[in-house]
Length: 388
Ligand code: SOE
Image (cartoon, rainbow, N blue to C red; front, side):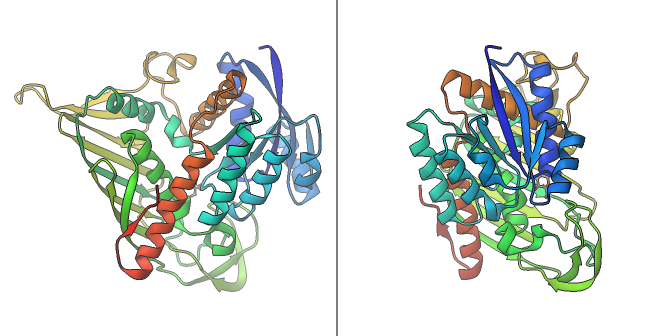
């Protein structure tokens, strides 16, 4: 390593923990061109931020992100806060000359995402990097799926079937957390987890959604207000408040290249905890993935003789699979956190090489446009074009 990269992370809940683990681990397992320094973690409550610094391994803590942006000894700002703060922090950080990694969805509205993408484009001229945090792209089996499609093994893509299924609020008494508040989260299942499958479908196929028609639904309109900031399993008191986002979203899509897409994002899929399922069918083959069995990619080669053809389970733990060589021997699988580590690796390598690793803020804006088109389509009950 020839230099350092001093990081300030804003937010220290579920995503902050995942990112901390990644910043800590990436330089230990990968030969990075720059040494990340976990300089400061920022949270609104000084006491909680200090405790987070201790628990997660940050050197220092602070309670005002604006002050941190003024520091010359910070190179990169990692945004792990709710969506309503992404735009303000990211734009200010880019203007201050800091590289930015921002959690998904990029923003709460298309207008905010446009401002962020414009700030990123301007910063790029100055050699400043901005990346959106769609970590599942960096699960080895998913990156392998992308490789197979890019090699042409699937031929012409006809179908994309994508689901993101969770069940953490199926109980009507589950707390009303910030993720169920439109002002803070922008949308519900659509933006929180639907954004992931939109990104994955477009990443794996190398195509983009051009048109969508969707339907959103809120099953439980009112819940007990959360009394803590705990992510998916907090506690609540007796006060009740309205749920202002969708609980579930379903939509159809047409890809620019002609493929058809069927998408479902829900937090009410009883029994499914974090099932991200992706199936892509092409003229020459198909792939299928389920995050609940995340080290496996199913691959069907349609060019094989019918008598022996069938979906085969590729255990994506071989050294020549994406990212795997840095980890364990074959068969010793990876987990949820490794996608975040790979994200840090790609980001740090991109910064050192003067390149701009995907997904860019422009990619994040495009996903935001898809989400917006699904939402307006649900309201108007009509197909919507996704601006290119
Ligand atoms: C909650 O649904 C959530 O934490 C998402 O916000 C994350 O992006 C996903 O990785 C896990 O589930």
